[in-house]
Image (tube, rainbow, N blue to C red):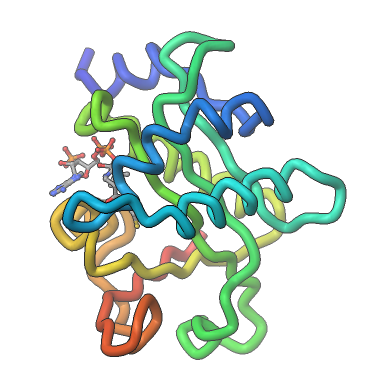
Length: 178
Ligand SMILES: CC(C)(COP(=O)(O)OP(=O)(O)OC[C@H]1O[C@@H](n2cnc3c(N)ncnc32)[C@H](O)[C@@H]1OP(=O)(O)O)[C@@H](O)C(=O)NCCC(=O)NCCS
């Protein structure tokens, strides 16, 4: 049995729960920082979006992976409405595209196949909710920590997008057909 098959057996994946949001705080703060400074506004905004997703009127779905069923989350990913700036990247005007949200694995659990497990489940859930593709980009701050992962999961970048994360930013766009 490979390590990845082991990982799929060892980790359980289910929907985000309210209690998970604060448990994910250290992971969010770890990754949402630049030059040692936590981007507090980004952390707050992400947690707020997660909270809203748990209410009745929402489009976003977040899933978490846990080492033990019912235990603390080791990583989180989600999908939701496509940001309008990605509309031109759809495969056709009739494509029902979702955006990828918040892909963060706790530093203790990176590189064990968990990202693959979560993104595969995101694609599966997006497909079963009627989406035909997922489109996303990634902040240049994650160039070394995520861009090759996305290419491994979705193929070469489909294009690039300017000014998405901050004025002057240039980042890849990936598109995964479901
Ligand atoms: C990006 C991230 C979600 C990937 O999750 P992960 O559990 O570490 O990735 P996996 O172990 O499932 O890797 C799956 C595949 O991608 C490859 N991969 C993952 N990260 C990689 C990296 N930084 N460079 C090169 N390849 C990478 C793995 O080698 C593996 O390939 P294989 O199946 O051929 O062996 C995770 O590393 C993470 O949280 N990174 C830091 C935060 C971040 O950058 N988030 C993205 C914000 S947009």
